Image 1 (tube, rainbow, N blue to C red):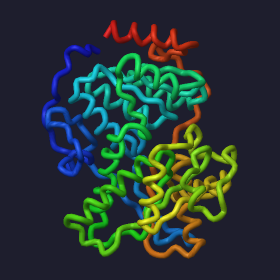
Image 2 (cartoon, one colour):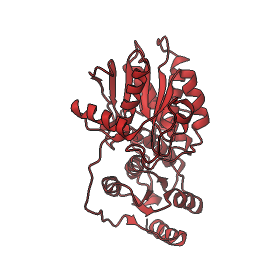
Image 3 (cartoon, rainbow, N blue to C red):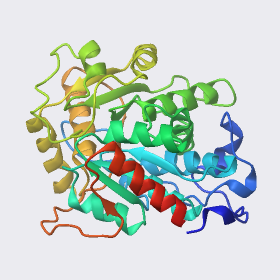
Image 4 (cartoon, rainbow, N blue to C red):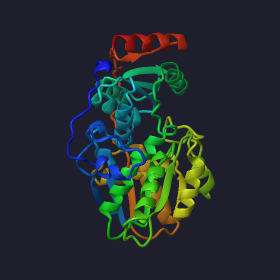
Length: 358
């Protein structure tokens, strides 16, 4: 990988991100738009007595395994155009895998910061995409340090506004797939809130331009684990024990996007739901009975829809299955791309060596 020899990519047919390029606040010039998936993700009907009418949007079938691909494509393309010498991200998995994929397409080094407890299967997925991986007990702090010392953009969705811009494509795509009649409600698992923010912004732009929707969908956030900031405000039952979670493991509270999201969810007529592990696992079983193997976060979104129905929710529900299910690898992952720095000094030395070599 040679950072000094970056060249613009050739033009191609726009896919799920770039066909909406004219809507984004800062779209990269055409030569810097990295190749995005060509086909929209499918919407399939789930027939279940407690949930119908319910439609599942299969973001878990995207090439990198999650909806984070949308943001990563936009974020890395922006950094590519700016001439950055690389990019970095701290993540619990999916966002890092997506960033690694698009950094490789741009011939840029990706520096990924994982907790030591990251799933081996996600660790392997990032290593296979040639990301330089740093395992530690403080991945967010290490990422901030590396970003400051080496002037590398931090693409963590909660702090990079370009992430929400990239997620706008999901909102536009939902409109295109439900052009004549909007779903009553949209459900999605949320930690930082960047995805829901992007969807909401897209719905606003559509509403002010050419939409024939009579009403926009209500936005509903599913939450569990440590990140329950939205549910703490909306869920009458209150938050649940952060340890009682199979979804959102690795997510953190305190996202800077929470205040804006509280307003957007309220204006949409939506809510936020705190889910227990039992509720998520029950929803996971419903998906499996339908022949769908998806992530715990996808199941938590379905569990939120189920609670909404129990509280009298009416109309068509659109549940976003945000990520694929990763198998549990018991064999340790070994790779030259994996580093385990014991200090900030170690981290600095490793990254300096990588950048000087590249």
